[in-house]
Image (tube, rainbow, N blue to C red; front, top):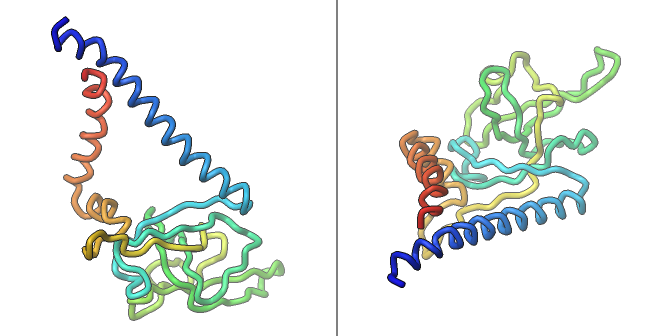
Length: 189
């Protein structure tokens, strides 16, 4: 049997083996997420810092971990939150600098004022329709982050691929193209 015939016979097996391995890796990630969710009773999400508005605390490319929702989880001045601005679809990550207790609507409630650490002014004029951000606009509260995960002294952040894809659409197209072609090419090997 020549090497071409052996390659053709092992090709589908190799592709199936790689698909199974990918499935196992995804299953492990899902199990870890589910275990953390079950242990804490909360759902988590992560975001990459895309601008310099939170420097020096968080640099572009740092990966932040957020606890979603948390209606019972109080927000305090100094907390970093993920919120939906009044205009635009891109959630914003900024620090709570002041809280305002509402008493006029009978139900009470807390309104929030946020600001990027590196910004000169608060977010009230640029990101809100009103002087204060209502609590229900807060999507999540930061609980941790992964900074400067560089190798051999390089200053690379955990989220640098997201920053590159955000800044240069051609990078995004190349990544999607490579991932899209990966499955059929793997099946042919």
